[in-house]
Image (cartoon, rainbow, N blue to C red):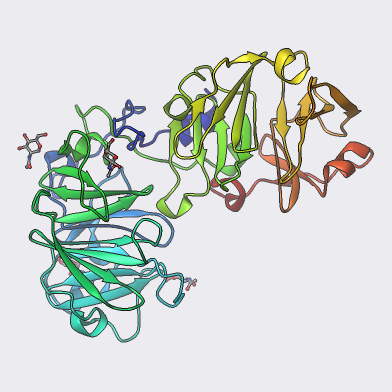
Length: 435
Ligand SMILES: *[C@@H]1O[C@H](CO)[C@@H](O)[C@H](O)[C@H]1NC(C)=O
Ligand SMILES: *[C@@H]1O[C@H](CO)[C@@H](O)[C@H](O)[C@H]1NC(C)=O
Ligand SMILES: *[C@@H]1O[C@H](CO)[C@@H](O)[C@H](O)[C@H]1NC(C)=O
Ligand SMILES: *[C@@H]1O[C@H](CO)[C@@H](O)[C@H](O)[C@H]1NC(C)=O
C-alpha cells in the first residue's frame, strides 16, 4: 500500500448496512497519560457532538477528546468560556445545529449546562450567550441528558432530539414546537450522536443505534463503544481517522453518482466526499461492493448504476442506499463495452450516454452506452499520460495524475488533444486531503 492509502484509511468503519462492524485496520491506540481520563477504561460520556468542520468531540467532566483517536484534553482549551462563567466543569448535552433556513444558526454547536445554553461557532462563544434554555429553546427542560440534531429527511422537519430520562423532546427548529415521546425501551442516553445518517444513544460504555422518528432499535445492541468509536488496546474494531496529505494523493478512481454521492477509490479502500459534514471516513471497498476484492482500476456512474472495473472484468451495481451486483456480473470488458485490455480511468458526463475510457497511457476511447452491441465510436490520443482517475461534473473534466489534476472544459476539447492543460495541485476542497 502506498502512503496515501495507508494514512487515508486508518479509520473507522462503523455502520455497515446490516449494522455489523468492519474489521480493525490499525494498531495505534489511545491511553497513556495517567493524569488524564482514559476513554479505553470504559467511560460514560456526558455529550458528543461534531463541529462545523466535521470534527467530533466527546465530553467527559472537564475533558474532551477530539476525534476517534488521541488523548483527552481540557474542554476549556477548545471552548474557553465553558467553565469561566459556570465553574461546573462538565456539559450535560451538546449538538450541532442543522438549520438551512437560518444560516445564522446553521452549524453552530450548542452546549447545555444545567439551565443554560451556550452557542459556539468557530470555537467562539456567540454574543448574548449563555442564555437560559427557555429563552432559546422554549419548552425544553433543564438538566438534560443528551441532545442530537435531526435534519429534515431523517426527521419530518429540521429538529433537535433532547433526551431526559426516558423522555425524548422533539424540538422543531422553525416552529419551536415541542413533542414529547417516551422511549422506555431505550436505555437512558447520557450522550446522543448522529453520524453518517445514523443515530446513536450512548449509555455507560455502550451505545445503542435507534431510529430518530420511531425510536426503534434493530439488531444486537448495546454494543461496546470502545470497539467502534475509539481506538483501544484489546478492542477489536475501532480505529482512528487521519486525512492524507494532498501531496501524497494517489487515486485509482473517482465518480459521482446520480444521487450526488462522490466516491473516491484508492487501494483496497474508498471514501465518500459528500458526507464531509460528518468528517471524512475511509472504508474497505468490499464493505459496499462485496464482490470487488482486489481494488479497482476505474469506476464510472451511469443511469443509477455504478460500474467498477478491475483488470478485464467489469462489475455493475444497482441501487442507492445498498448496492446490489446485477445478475450475470462480473463480465469481461470485451463482452460489456467492446474494449480490450485494462483501463486507467473512465468517466461519463452528467446527462450524457457516452463513456470515455482512458487506456494504454494516452488513448481515450468512447463507447455509446445506448448502443447494442457496444463498440468504440471514437479513439483519440490524449495530451497527458498516464492518468489515474477522471471525473466529469459541472466544472468540466478533471484528470487526476498523482497529486495533480488537469481541467478541461469538455470531452470535445479534451479529444482535440492538442492543448495540454496546466497541471494544478489537488486541493482539500476537491478530494478532502490535507493541504
Ligand atoms: C480549565 O479547567 C481547568 C480544570 O477545571 C482549570 O484548572 C483551569 O484553570 C481552566 N482554565 C481556564 C483558562 O479557564
Ligand atoms: C476562527 O477563529 C480563528 C481564531 O480564533 C480566527 O483566526 C478566524 O479568523 C476565525 N474564522 C472565522 C471564519 O471567523
Ligand atoms: C454494556 O452492554 C453489555 C452487553 O452488550 C452488558 O453486558 C453491559 O452490562 C453493558 N454495560 C453497561 C455499563 O451498560
Ligand atoms: C428494522 O427492521 C425492519 C425489518 O427489517 C425494517 O422494516 C425497519 O425499517 C428497520 N428499522 C430501522 C430503524 O432500521
